[in-house]
Length: 144
Image (cartoon, rainbow, N blue to C red; front, top):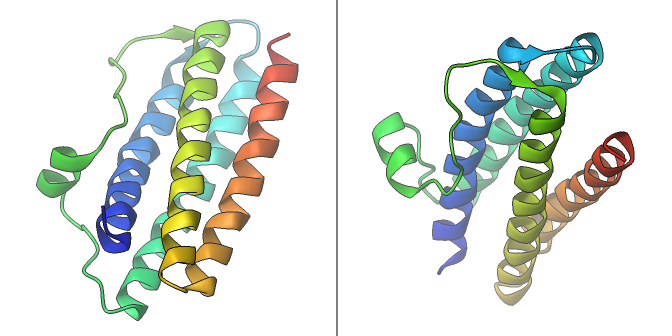
């Protein structure tokens, strides 16, 4: 997979994740509602920033970022959630699995960017990787 293709897949995944985080934010139920409701909002706001940064980096490189839902849904690997309540334990499990997905994808993108001698893109995804790893650590600590 080329760097452009992988960045587009990442961008598509982020777009679906943005909606998925809203789903978690809206449908979270239980005693941890207030904590998780706020955390999911923080995460979807962060995802919105990532969407913009990745798309703008792609444009800077002369790439064409995926920007319509038909194309996004054709290439995403993120699994959507049903429109129904979710308890905190299940929500954290879902999010933990997704964060692990982002860690793996970020590592692949860093490798592709390094192979293309694109230190700026590698640096961008290294920053994302650090945040994902920290978030994963926090989710595991929260759920233990």
